[in-house]
Image (spheres, rainbow, N blue to C red):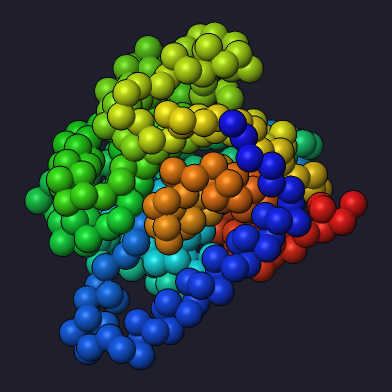
Amino acid sequence: MRLPLNNHSTVLLLRERERESLKKDKLEREVGSMDSKEEARASAEVVTFGEMLIDFVPNEADVSLAESPGFIKAAGGAPANVACAVTKLGGSSAFVGKFGDDEFGHMLVNILKNKGVNVDGVCFDSNARTALAFVSLKKNGEREFMFYRNPSADMLLNESELNMDIIKKAKIFHYGSISLIAEPCRTAHLAAMRAAKDAGALLSYDPNLRELLWPSLEAARKGINSIWKEADIIKVSDEEVQFLTQGDPTKEDVVMSLWYEGLKLLVVTDGKDGCRYFTKNFKGRVIGFSVNTVDTTGAGDSFVGALLFAIAKDAFVLEDEQQLRAALTLANACGAICTTEKGAIPALPSTSAALDLIAKSEAK
C-alpha cells in the first residue's frame, strides 16, 4: 500500500534527515580517533566504476555537429557524474577508472578532486588517449552522440590496476554497461563487482545504453543482461525498458519482466514525468518537476547520485516506502535541476537547491 506523502512532508522529512546526518558527522569528527579519521578519508560510501570523458556540446541547440559554430567543453561519463552528484549533496564518493596520460585526462581527474571525489582508484595510460564525445542538442534538450575511443584509456583498465581496498570499503558499488564492451576492462569490471559484493556492498546498476558503442544491438542486449541479476538496485529509463524487453515500457507486466528474485529496488525513470519504483513489498510512482530544460545530459546521473546518496546514509530507505518516496522525490528534483544548464557536472544541484525546488512545487 502506497503511503501518502506530499511535497511539504517530503521536504520536512529530507531536511530532518539532513540535520541528523550533519549531527552524526559532527559527532564522529569530535570523538573519532586519528586512525579512524584517516580510514574515513581513504574510503567512500559510494564507489563508482567506469568511464569519464570530455563532452563537447554545441553552443547552439538544434544544429548538427557539422553546423555548430562552436562547442562547450564539459566533463562527462555517467559513473563519474554519479560520483560528483553524491559529493555535491554532501555524501562521500570515489571513482575507479583509467585515463589517458594527457592534458584531458589530468584535467578530468582534477575536476574529480575539486568536486571532493576520492581518486585513489584512478590510474593513467601513457599509450592511450582520454575518450572524447561530441553531443548534439535538439531544441528540447535531447541528445545525439558521436564518440572517439579507438580504444580510449578507460577501455584498457586491467584487473591488476584495481584499487581493491577502496572497492571493498564501499557501502554501494555503482557501475554501468559501457565498461563491459571490451577487454580488458570487462574482466576488471567483473572482478570489481565480485570484490564489492563479497565485502558486503550493495551493487547498483544503471545500464546507460549507448547503442553506437556496441558492435550490434543484440550485443548490447546480451552485454547489459549478462550482469543483470548481480545487482541489488537497478535504474533504467523508459527507453531502456523498451530496448531490453522490446515491449511497451508503460505497461507494468513489461517492466516486471526485468524483475528477478533478490533484486531490492527497480526504478524506471520517465523523464519529466518522474519515475516508477518496484520492490518486493511495494510499488508506485513519484511525479517529476517542470523546469526550463536546456540540456538533458547528466539528468539520469544526477537522479542516481541523489538516490544512492540517500540509500548510503540509511539503507532502510529500501524497506520503508515513505522513506523511499522521499528519496525518489529528491532524486527527481536533482534530475530536473540538472537539465537547466549545459553540461552534467556543472549543473549538479546541492541538497538545498533540490529542496527549494520541491518546496516551490508544493507552493504552486
